[in-house]
Every structure is written in C-alpha cells, then in structure tokens.
Image 1 (cartoon, rainbow, N blue to C red):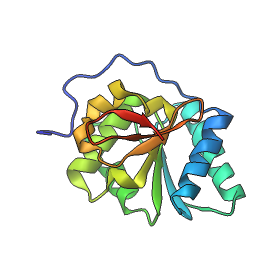
Image 2: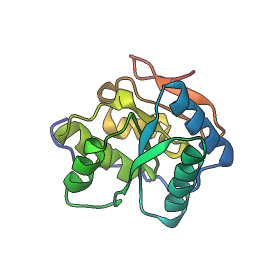
Image 3: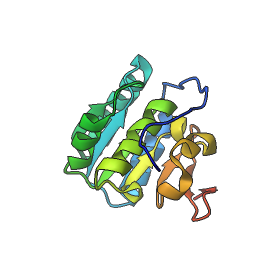
Length: 165
C-alpha cells in the first residue's frame, strides 16, 4: 500500500444486519480460538450498531468480556484516531462488522499505522467477500478469518482465496 486511503471503492450497498446464526458462529469461532476478551469494531449505521450490541450481549452471555466497542465512519479524513484506539484494546481477538467501504478504510489505517495483526481478527459476513477483501488487498490480510452471513466459517488462504473452514 502506498497510502491507507482508498483511491477507488466498490459501489457496495451496506448489509447492516447480522443474522442470529452469524452472531452464534462469530461467538463459536472466537471461543474456538481461545478468546476470553474481544474488541468489537463496526460502522455507524443503525443496523450495524444493533448488530454490534447483539454480538456484545451474546459474547457476554457466554462469560466473555468485551474490552472495547468502537465505531468508525464510512467517510473520514484518516481513521487514525479510531484505528489507534481499536489496536490498543486489551483483547484476545478483534471482531469487525461492516459496512464494507468503512471497514476497508479502517483496516487499511490499522495496517498502515498500528501494530494490529489480521490474524487476530474475525470478520462478519458483510465484509467476508473477496471483492471487499480486495479493497484492502488479500496479501495484506494474512491469517484473517470470519463467517458468512449464513454462519459458515472461512479463512483466507495464502494465495488470497477465501476457503471454507
């Protein structure tokens, strides 16, 4: 990356909601990775905010702790303030929700300006798409994983392909 800011982006309509099966799959995937404390990051549209609250409630109902719930805008000057706070969270795992373009901008800033590592992140279905991952560049997302909208886990292969787990 020569800059954390996208020069162009997909014309992707945000899928704000997160399904119940997706929430359960994110909790199960985080538990399978041994996480006890998570940080949740999301866009600011009403559906995504509701999804982040639902995920936090589901995580806490299993005895987990939420170290941080952070939101980021779809459009910003740099996302540096949000990226710095998100990366600094005392968490075992970072769970990230959409919408896609804001997620891509935030992730690019995380990679550019912090010590955050994609291998410690799980993505919700709205950002679990090869076109969306392409906004960041699959070669920059080593080890990232997530779940689809219907709850199927996946991980990013070394060649940049999304592989069902």
